[in-house]
Length: 327
Ligand code: ATP
Ligand code: LTN
Image 1 (cartoon, rainbow, N blue to C red):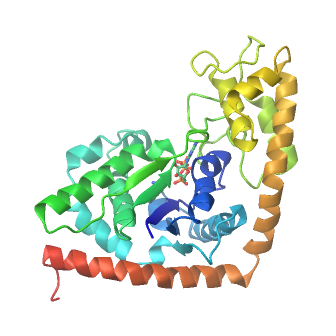
Image 2 (image 1 turned 180 degrees about the horizontal axis):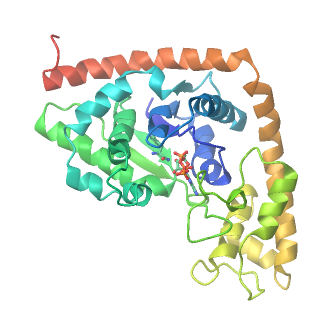
């Protein structure tokens, strides 16, 4: 069975972008692949984190994985720092990476703001991500398109090591879901919807109350044309909302545009509120149940054990091919 790996950072409330861009694919893939879904806490500490909050967010993300439909009987769900191989392989791959290629990563440029005091971990972040993926001989990595550059780096590193040493790694492929691949921020559609943006109305979190969902959608930036049509260049705000509508219903963008011919943004937004609230209600209900159960901890412990068993095999091969250690 081919293998899938993906990760989400425990840095805040998971939003619609995370769900449509990544999490939803996780559920579909578990039928066809052996899937590993990780809560990447080592990635989260590339920026300062409050320890108590971080722990809470780890369990929140784990519960959300399960609430959206990841099935621990089919998939391995675990916390990154519970498997030492991630850090170990991260270092080994850091030594095979070039500072030039890392300084071209757009996420690093965006998050470091060119400051000399930017944490070095932000710079090497994509290498740790490559380690996450290569540690499990992953074939397919489902992510949002914002991660494309990191996936390409991971492939380059795998190929580089394979070409300079014995064949060590499986070269993975990214899998980008089109409908929800890039959900934009509701208050500024030139930016992606993000957990870390200051304005809470820029995003819809999966656990938002209906009143908050309504407020965020009704406030969402559109334009003054008043006609419902899909045009990413001229009407990025409305087009983003149409995309969300389409991803949460079984309607295509063309269906939606046809349905709202002659209608105003108010009607469209009201319906989008209803569709969003209905889509998220069962997720929130399941989340509340799972989050407070001991079962969640048991699932993560069991996941870490299974992940470790795979990781240890890869690390033995890597160490051997690099000549590290005694055996
Ligand atoms: P931040 O926005 O604070 O940087 P993030 O939400 O981008 O955080 P992650 O938690 O690591 O960061 O993202 C988890 C997954 O969600 C990744 O696969 C990522 O590609 C996807 N993702 C994140 N934002 C969006 C978005 N706006 N649209 C689609 N997919 C997204
Ligand atoms: N970098 C990703 C999170 C992430 C990831 C991974 C995704 C860390 N390791 C491995 C897929 C595979 C992000 O910021 N969205």
